[in-house]
Length: 211
Image (cartoon, rainbow, N blue to C red; front, side, top):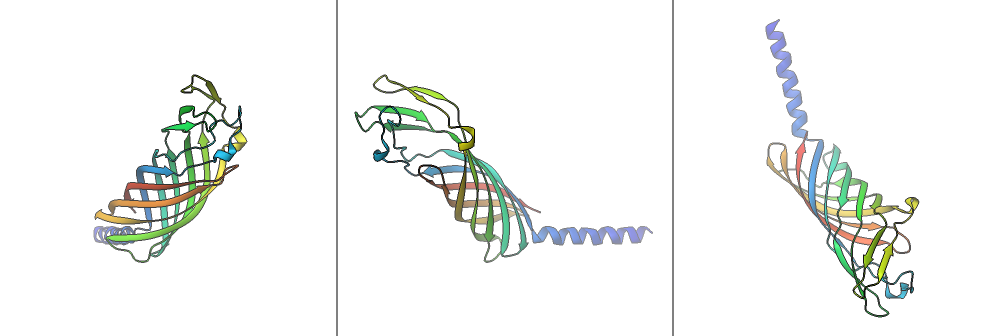
């Protein structure tokens, strides 16, 4: 009986080891930054309503986690959650040159992507394409401009805070020890907001574990 139990345990251990080596499931925790491209146009200026029409490019930090499943060695599906933090930007009133320094809103995004992995090894490059939803996290805010004008920036209605997004990118998984390693990821995201869509480039570094 003892020999049978030992043999069964060895068999289960072998199956578990083989499954772990396949590494079909991967969890990643990451952080980095976004480069949000300039948004808006001087032509959007409207006195008393949109005095600061251009949002300049800025570089907020981000962090998040991703869960991927690879049914095939070259193909995977990944669920990604990430938070983009606030950062200071300075806006300009094109009519009189008044300046206004504000903090950009936080963004929380969830996406689902296909991962294409041409080969798998200690170093595994990949391409991805997918989409999802972006939600801004913002409240009514009041600022004072350089010319001492009080500027009220109301938060948009709740039903206008969520927008669709698409993304495409590439990265590398670098296996460091066992089923653990580093991940380097760069992706382009486009948020379809009104009246204009918003583009950004995200770069992150993460730690992953495969199971």
